Image 1 (cartoon, rainbow, N blue to C red):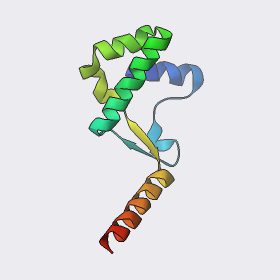
Image 2: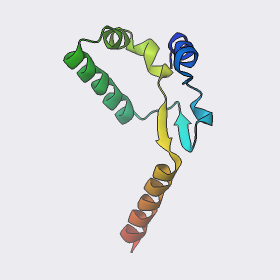
Image 3: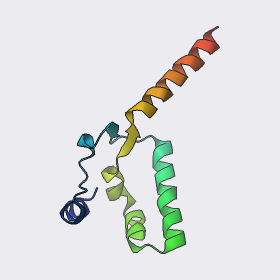
Length: 94
């Protein structure tokens, strides 16, 4: 999260962005190009449908905001994806 916004969330709601300690999730700073395209499109849609000024600011300065986003994935979901890929590779090898 943007530090100023994160500080405000922690102060008002006690929901700071310390996601590494919030439970069973993996936090990653490196997104695939597909992840980045999806994120950009989600924010674009949000701006289109809501007129969000903050969303527009993020899109207009994408190169600086992009590295501030994190990919969050539940540990069990990641494990299931890996297992499904192993099974797919096993079937393909037969």
